Length: 406
Image (cartoon, rainbow, N blue to C red; front, side, top):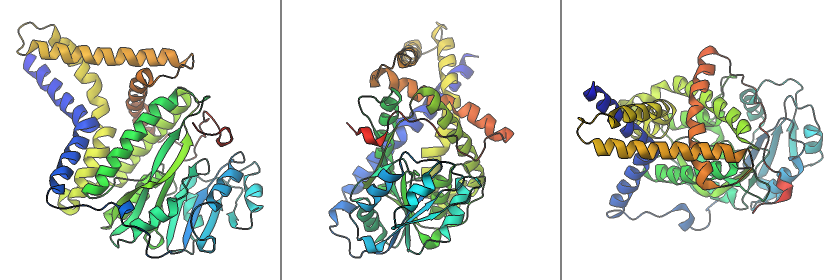
């Protein structure tokens, strides 16, 4: 029994360590070693872009009247020739003034239908109107950095690049809720890892807030697709292209207004993750996809599947082993278990403090981590039972653009 418990403990411990830290450490070491023999030049060091191809900035929006004007004005202020920029808004199902407001801008092409059938359907419908060789997808509730389009074009100068992932940033203001602390830290770590992924071979997936593809590589999505950005980008990678990461192309948005709203998002994303693994099952073949399979499993699959399951098992097996005086290395089991219990105690403190709207990354980051992994379980149930609707239930955000960033 002790041997089984010890095996479970160390196996789960390794899965957790590798999924949330070890993989990134491995990439960092490998890139450092590679740098000893081959000097790398970052995209930002390559200077000005050689050409300025036509670009389509593509937005799907549902009842976003509060953000339309600022989003469009932000798009028009981007550093890129206006005559080479096509602006498309698909507003299917909107019942507010979203399509009417967008239509007041002569630079914007608005394609509206009263029926709401989900984002994947809107993407499929809208892509028929794209005339540019490059299409940049972005959300209506995000603001883009001024140099976003040039940073994206610079990456596409390499013919092997089929998709470019931008950087997602979480903005905080004085009125931001406590979720911003945890989500902001998560995306800073995720951005660092995406950067390493890109340098090693290919970024794994793209965030819908800002990413771009070669228009010719778009393949129609199944209308019940939940994670359209991830599946679309990874299918391009499966065609033999790489996904580059452009850190100078960033989109800013506010976090969910409270943990309940964030939990809704995470459960949906988790359900979408299981759907994506089924639809990208061929990507698990390392003999065909090599490095891409290794990165996909290390960065995503383990996080979505074995890591959340390992968390309770490593804790429970650790507690059991900590009371077995005859087990070799008792102090190690006791130490690791004590650290886990301290971590969850801090997470519980974060849960209690968020009710009082106390913002503290020290307390809320562990809570956010715990919430994120817990969401995998109801997400799996929803996907398995087919109860996750393709229609997004909009999460309330902690702030609005108009109040500014800090």
